[in-house]
Image 1 (cartoon, one colour):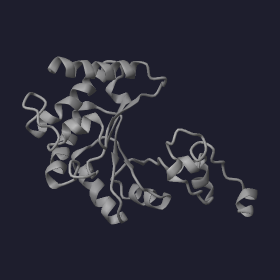
Image 2 (cartoon, rainbow, N blue to C red):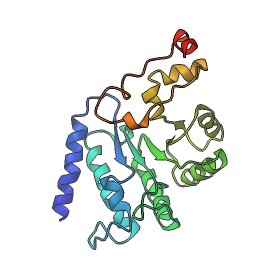
Image 3 (tube, helix red, strand yellow):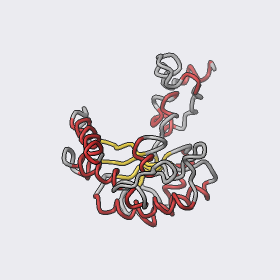
Image 4 (cartoon, rainbow, N blue to C red):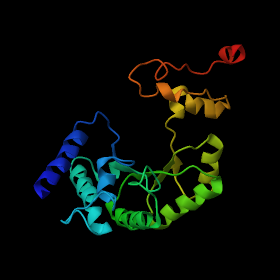
Amino acid sequence: MRCRIALVGRAWARSAGTADTSNGVELHAQASHLIPQFLNPRLNQRTDAYGGSGEKRARFLLDVLDTVSDVWGSDRIGVKMSPGWTSGTAFTADEETLADYDQLFKKLNDSNLAYLHLLGTPGTIEERIALFSRYRAHYQGNIIANLGFTQALGNEILDHGVVDAVSFGAPFIANPDLVERFAQGHPLADGDRDTHYAGHTEGYTDYPAFTADRDRNE
């Protein structure tokens, strides 16, 4: 079984090696992807080196990181994770799982990553700051905050110094010029989530950039 797991890790490395980028790669270990299934104490029932304690459940992620680092230097690898993500009964952000992530973040300090890309949870700015302050207490490298941030919320959490950057995902779909809109104070367009990732350009990649004439007409 360990041989099969090693093969999966090498597949990640091959994918990283063919990435068409000069900047680096981001390893997705968030939501219900394979790596968080290994990290999850309710799903990972293994009794070998990859299951049991939180440290053993984290071994798969660390092994994959080591393998991908052979292709890209670790300082050009980011890892995206979602410690606070809840879905059904399998993925619940209780104190047990959060404590496991605390220990994993401490371990990742040794990996010299480009960054950790962490999904937060919806809430007030005070709740967001408290959550990312917890992450910051254990991880000393670059942290990118994600999930549900507005420009104002993003600036506020940056001002508190608990994260190094804030990322925006869904707003870019309806606002391909999101950075310019932020910089110029232009209003944001609303996207239709029913058409996101539906396999068609309509309502996904056909949103226009901001123009003053269009805004006045609307």
